[in-house]
Length: 525
Image 1 (cartoon, rainbow, N blue to C red):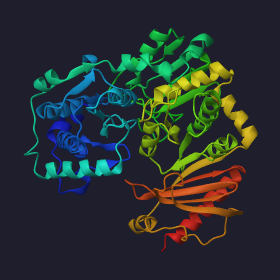
Image 2: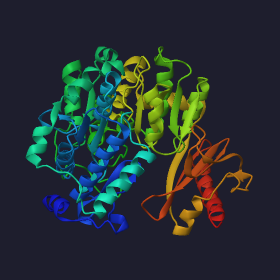
Image 3: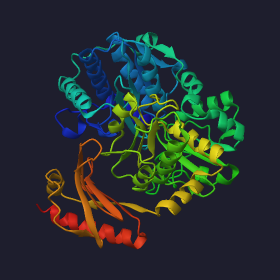
Image 4: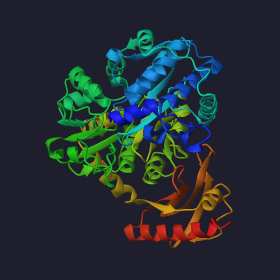
């Protein structure tokens, strides 16, 4: 890791080389120091661009600055602080300069902006669950959630202009001056004290459940320790190690070290001791994702989302019936069936949590969840809690569900399948050419001329999300018993096919075969 940190400071990106420029994806800018895709120059340029964006947006409140436990995160945090201090931006950081979970930053922004006219925003230094050598930075404006494409495009363009000018007009102070400029804020205490607003902590306490949690070497560690202490829970943190090499991690399915709490391979340490607990949890390094473990093992994220939605609709009496339920278009259709059974409105959006932000912030979206184990929800009285993914609150919701219903999350899901049928879900990656990627952008609802898919009549062909009309960057084809969606990868020469069948695993394979054949035809143009 020393060599990676050295490369972070020593390697200088060439802004004339496309892959070495600042590039914001669905979760900010990510890269590797040794490949000159995540270096000090990037952080200086991005932070100065954010300072400029704040001026354009009229933000005069503080910026909440957090970082996770990856090796490059603390150095990048210091670089960002150098720019913010030089520009006299008021900065709030965790007390004792500790690391900070993503949902705590989002919650802090919302708390400040609820009672102050001088609006606050935030920067979080994290590559999420990515391997130890990776770095990342993401920006959350005044709504507290991930910045939308308009904001990130503006910041990206401005940051790359600074890189082209070799940071000649970027303001900096020394690290010592920057640290002296920062004001401390107890993110953990503020967040933990208010958890009862969003989850029934009293019910969890009264049930005296045996709870286990693996923070996976990430920012959730101090939060879970504070939760256990404040609420006197029977909660064991099974791993308190913080190691930038994440040497304690079992390899993921492909042999790489990746702190993915939705992967049974990465969660092997917790799964090996699952029978010690009534329910157990895992979080990724910035704690914006949740992994739920009970006696039946690690829950599929799609299954847990369906359980959360059914439970919340029936156990949040203060929530108005008009509140919508959000899902991404590649999340399970079990969610559609659950929402319809309660006569609630589904809000289906493209991939990316940013599409849920406005609804959560404005209070008309009760819940937003995506298939990759990220979700957030309103408070019990229907107010904004976190407009970014909150892995900690979702883990505690699993405990609440068991405490209140007496059913583990997997038992609850089994009952849903008895009511609505059992879906079988799969994602397949398929190699594709640049021409095929370009062809995805030209698809429309008339592109598919076939009348049937895997033996069932096609009921819809979508290139825009039903919830908000935004482009899905690909296509989704539905039938009464299943669906598939396909979209090209933003970073690799492949496209991703998501498929689900309510008729069984054999039909799922048939659906994927039919989808592959259909795509081969329509992508020819």
